[in-house]
Length: 344
Image (tube, rainbow, N blue to C red; front, side, top):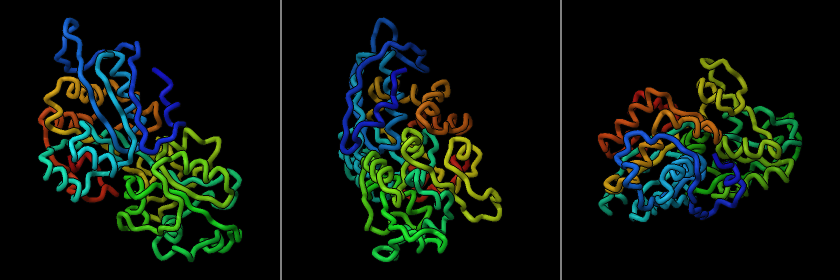
């Protein structure tokens, strides 16, 4: 497979990549195309920078089988992706949170029915500068102290978080308000989606966060696990203590294992793709989604730093695609603490 991680090092704001073909071979499940009838057409995808590495990897491998299918994968954030999706500009929307009620209404007004497909789990990673030797573990209450709206203009130094921390200025970096990661983090930490202090450096480009935190010993930021792992030589991940006596795990570092065994709480989350129902009438879109959701292709989810959903959940997701089941099981709500197997 191509070195898909290279894409993570490129600027991601309003980014568009046109994928070329590759020569790897793999069997495509449930394909209706014969060798004498090569698959053609085009597929337009946009949305979350968090989901982008998975979709880009799947698209590369799919084009190795069907090089005549033209695919574009853009990155404009979950909210920006849904704006394009609900205006009919894209076939598939990457999303690091469920579609919101307002977005469902926008799609409905445009006559766009959608199918919601969970594809993996991610861990929102809180990161600090490698030279920060005091904040190796933070509680969820301390994160709330840092990020709650009331902290704006007031919480300015680390010793305001914990008395034995140094009187070092704290500079914050995070996703912009169009990001699903922003929505999930604020919901999980502040208890209300979209509620956050506003005096931080916000960007839909995760590389801006990497650069900001890596160059400032007092900085703190957050984004998806894959971007931390890609930049682990420049950043340090904060261990999270959710102060849950039933958990009993204490400080937990974000990792695939911690997500898989449900100990990294409350910052582990499902991530999604959404497809327009009408787009499934085109063979190239249907074949790509069958490829994307095949359990034999779970390896690509792991290779780019995410946690595959279980085979049992895969079967339920595949059934949603097969039956063309429209709508959201989350009703525009939160995924914090939700178990996919129970809601699908």
